[in-house]
Image 1 (cartoon, rainbow, N blue to C red):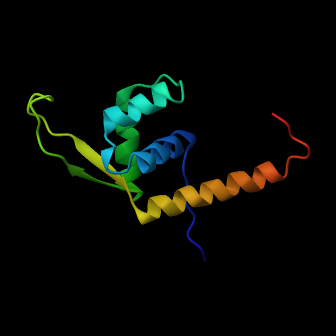
Image 2: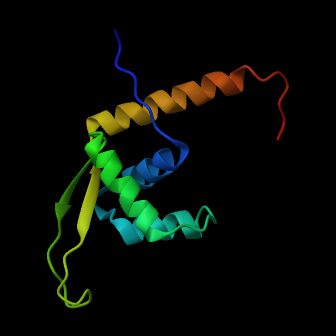
Length: 108
């Protein structure tokens, strides 16, 4: 039986942003894209919680980047999408396309 992937709407957005940022995805960069490009106000702690939840599900991996003076010597955690994460996004995309195709004469 085929493995099923489950993503909430916000998880899907965060996973898409991480995939788009590739190796530059971290809490602040993801938050900024959601706020600026999607015009959706969001709390950075919600993004961090979602990033860690996606990592627990196996859809993301993370690593610590080097410390910088700009960040006061602190390191940032960079997130990368995994093969499982890509498969989850593909399944969600296919499901959405299927459902959209079932709406007769829908015009936005």
